[in-house]
Length: 628
Image 1 (cartoon, rainbow, N blue to C red):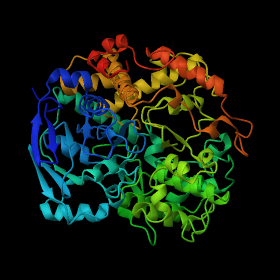
Image 2 (image 1 turned 60 degrees about the vertical axis):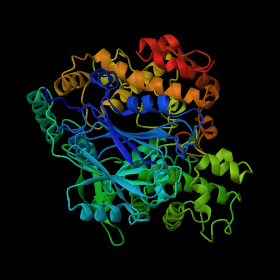
Image 3 (image 1 turned 180 degrees about the horizontal axis):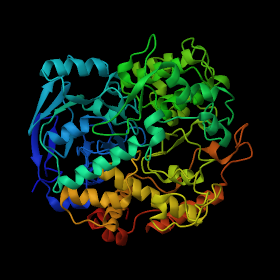
Image 4 (image 1 turned 60 degrees about the horizontal axis):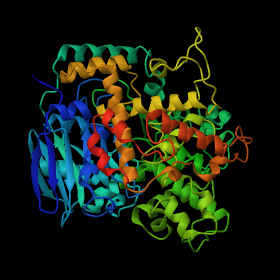
């Protein structure tokens, strides 16, 4: 039977230079599916409590899902995980592109890296084979240089790479892992872990078939989605503009973070950063992931820019643009390009620079501290210069490479009030004072503030003609009535939890949220791909299992209820704009957090998962990692 997974996990001991293959069995893949669950299983069982995230005891896991590599839209993603050097908590990031499919088609379901290599290396994976190769000549190279050199060395122009640039090598705590030149596993500092292990890249080339048990159903589903995308029935705006369309509308609601989340008004500058405008001025097309009809990735070109690095998506545009008070799309595009070349998370990089700008304008940093850079909001040239300094860990860049939480502690003088972070991870580019469900998601995310598995609830207050909840995904999970955007009561918490569980399921399969497959579609696709007779209930439990295991890991590492909070600024209003009389009520937020605990089955006071919950999720073994 030709399943969509191989039952083969590579295990690479970098210290010894050895490789073996584990075969955990069908039950393992049915229970976990891939992604976050495989990462959590390895981190809990194999990484000792208190391990240094940048030390040899940490393990780095690249985990596609059972659907990765299928020739259909949304099926080209993988998760990368380790103990995070940015937060000290559960670390995971998801990424699209083409490497994921090549790796699966090379005959493997995941790869676990152990120890530290004495010299730089890369892994070459191809049609059932894997070998470590010397990467000393690649150390210090940008991602583009690395990709070109490895392809030439292998004599394989179609090899796909996941890799780090100089930022990862220098262990910038929020360094990312790049799939090719445009797709980043951006959050939690997985690139720094890769650098600490002296692992430069994984090159993959595969020709194995991944049709699944019922290849015809896969083909039919793939054609139906491709047709719907072409007809504009699904993901139409993503296909046309990617992310970041009509940011003036975001300003009207206060959802465009501006000047380090101080302001809610960016005037006409927001339009300068909107996809419609800069695609018209410097856009040269749209790109996409393996076998996906939704080509949502912008590519830009202008003098001084390298179009091979694509173009800035919304998160990059806002973090390096509006959050720094910059509306120059050329400067933003250059800064984004440098982040991709050096393997830096654009969100954290932009937030660190915005934080430094606010410190500078408040006298906590001087021209001497900035090496003469006029680090004021609105200075696009300064943003580009600081990206380079962070990548090189040079001057102030060395401090900012530690992330805003550590930088604020070092600067002192009240700098902590400018640090927009949760659990040490910088805020994404969505305003929790506007999206209250997102606020709960930020506070409770196991990886720190995250916009991908948190609920964007701004549209939940508008009823359908029948009066139902407008969000079809949530409606199908039993949330039937609209919920006002300002609400932070039990119904909003329930919606937040339902959305997170659904998103975690996607992070295990691993599927893209931009392709609007329904839960019933997921059931049909997983059945056709794997041969497992799964149900919707079972798939949602996959997501709940991932969320709970990540919580167990964080509990073991000392995180608790006091860490389930927002940045201090979020409890007050913006200086201007739609949220100038806003701000989240601290006590209401605290009650929402405890309501979340009770709903998911964790201890209602501490948020520690109960033994009974772990047993209900078929991971009773994890109870040994609970406190006491």
